Image (cartoon, rainbow, N blue to C red; front, side):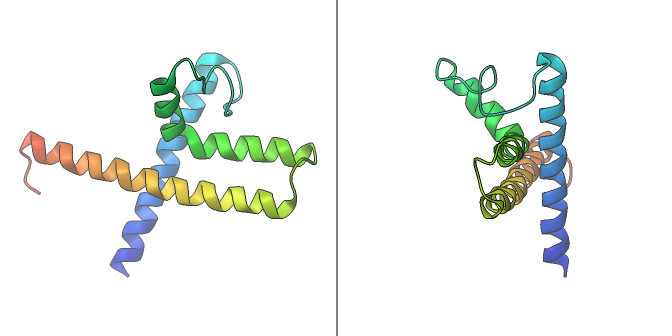
Length: 111
């Protein structure tokens, strides 16, 4: 049961980071977050990677919902994008918690 709680916590952390990053980017740019300019650009690869890593699930769900509204993808594809966003949020949460754990160790706090 403890492992399930840790996975759920990591998922919630990933959702929080993704939501905060995506919402902040939307507020700053005034545009919906998606896998398009100004967020993702071949001219700025590192920035695009950072943006996609942080707000990728948010971007994926936005793009998938837009595509579904325009009937470009099926409901099954929309559900697949939703499952991918869930897995991505979990992975993001695990990475954020690992970085936080590493930072706490560097600062010398007891673990």
